[in-house]
Image (cartoon, rainbow, N blue to C red; front, side, top):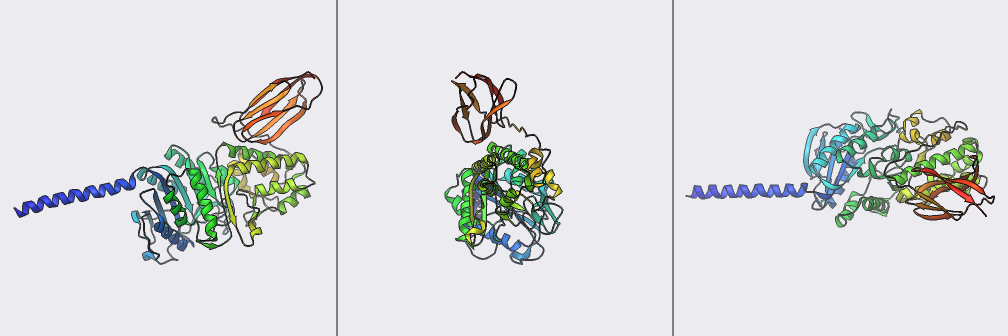
Length: 506
């Protein structure tokens, strides 16, 4: 009888234990507002910082509100803590309030060696993460060394992010690997990745953002070097604990705020730092067109042979220009605008660039000692070498292919200005133009570049009514033409171009 009671009790206990495990697993894998995927490449001289960031995540995480999955590759030498394991391990990050260096999160995969410089390794990690930990929103953090699109310090053949020392490889930007990874992730998700955060140096460039514009909604990156300790993961996750239903825009902005605060005498001390977030919706493409047309106008006034342009260049905020040649595009446009010897036709497009950058950079933070060191940081840099002998890989970038005139400008070209690209995503709204009583009425659905000109019946341009960037709203223009006659008003934007008849009777 005791055996029967014991057996029955044991069966009941096992059933309850099984159900408890199922419940815990279900809680972990239930659809949550966020799954954060961290591609933590510590297979290099940053191994110690990688362990420190894992510890920060463990100290702050609340697994009831969101998931954090980390694929962690270590170096065969360097930091010897945590048993000094050398393989790649995937962790489901769990709480650990201790202040030692021991990683206590749940290992969900191990015993393999991932090549963290291979985009396919990144894709495989993300695929498993989104399958096993579904969420409403996803953020991918690529953690490691970075150099924008340009050469790294040791001049590896590729130019990009995530240097894996064991394989001597990194993920290239100019060769399309970075874009390939994001395109593949887009396919896996069936939508754009909500946030791509680059916890790596010098990725905050126009060329980098343009590579992923179709596959990512918000990109977080730094124009400048990232401090050794990287993002303040405890500060970021503590914010998310209170704001677990944050939108992608809200979370990406919070990362920038927490990063700046942490290095401006906050949790990670005082160090020089920049971080920004770019909204990669359709306005970003307008910004690219503005930069391209700005370059055309610069070329028209002799480009880099013009000493006034070169003066503006030398006054522009730069970031590690000894080998990266990365300059803040907003600050350059601002310096062009301030130069009294630059024609208004160029200054107008400098204004357009500044307005467009203001629209796409939705949050930017920087701090430095002295404060003037990074005061020209506005959130988006661009390649601008000291001489006109540019890196030949620059022509392989999608930005250079779609909008070649910035490349033509920095090469020192003064002839052969390319025609404007007409990239027209189908989801763009169009500007609406109406003519009433010799006035031009324009309705603009969102920030866009607008070109309004008046032509006579012989096709000769008679007046430039407006050329530049306009924000969302309704506008009224009064033509300056006095001569009575029949004319045509032509409206051009990146999303539409058409003409309407205008009759002047006064």
